Amino acid sequence: MRSFVALLLVSVAAGTLWDTRTYQRPEATQATETLDIYVIDVEGGEATLFVSPSGEALLVDTGWPGFEGRDAERIARVAAQAGVRQIDHLVITHFHADHFGGTVQLATHLPIRHFYDHGPRIEGGERAQAQLRSYVDVRQAGTHRVVIPGDTIPLGVIDVRVIASAGAVLQTPLPGGGVPNPLCEAFVPHGPEITSRAADAEDLRSISLFVSFGAFRTVIMGDLTWNMEEELVCPTNEVGTVDAYLVSHHGSDTSGSEALVHSLRPRVAIMNNGPRKGGSIQTFQILDASPGLEDLWQSHYSVAGGDVHNRPLEFIANLDEGSPMEGAAPGAALVHMGPAHWIKLSARANGGFTVTNSRTGYTKRYESRN
Image (cartoon, rainbow, N blue to C red; front, side, top):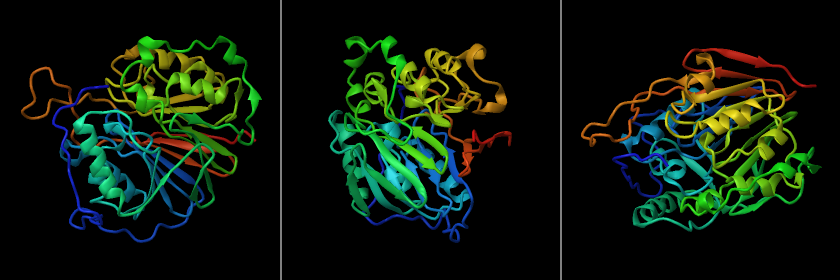
């Protein structure tokens, strides 16, 4: 995991959910004909906002803590642009700082009504446990539910299903799933040199979601690990195919196997990577070989990928690597503190969709497969 400096732990009293000095409550969101998905840049963390046609909002993860509230600010600004007045459902995929760390700060900008996670954290030192206690305090202001594979999360006409959680995966196929996966024969599991990492204990417990709107289908995997993916799609692929694949684990080489990605057969992949986190060469190669993939969109230019693997600039939301934080030690990780650009996918019920890069305004339309 990329090392960051000056992680700031902010505590708020339960119920303190809106900072009217910074953000004003927008009017109720107007109904639309699309499911809008905003992949928000949190510098190699995770924060993805789903806005249903009726305006209900589901947020998956909240980015990093600290950095002067940077990630919570970014999420709140995108929510305001989307006309979102509250987070109706917050899914915390797992308890790593880059996925749940911004929750406390976000709760000062937006009300959060319902919280979902995989249950108790099973790793981490005192600082990690302190972050978890702060999250639990904020969680008490809403309702809380531990989810297991097969559970659903209500989001109007959008079907949201849990396909992995707490080290277990879906056992009953989704519509279109349950098909034998020939890629399983060539699957090579990760060995103990990778799976013995301390971080793996939380990663393999990640919540993964299947989200559909009419004929449109997508998945968001959290940091579900390579070996856990195999349990989901082998010997049969319980998920089926998707239109868009929200790339696992920031594009790290500990997730995103051929057995998963190639059996999903996405038309588009969107990778929420940082400049030096995720975006691995292996991930680019697996996506390059994925049958039917038309385009890869990226949150950041990947330093590891270089010009050989990164996509054309119109498909990349953020290009700069950042700068050292004030007072940081020499050699400390670079941090981008200013506004950041997002990638937006707008899906129609017929399965067609568009993807937009907010940095350039470049939009590409993908027609329905039907």
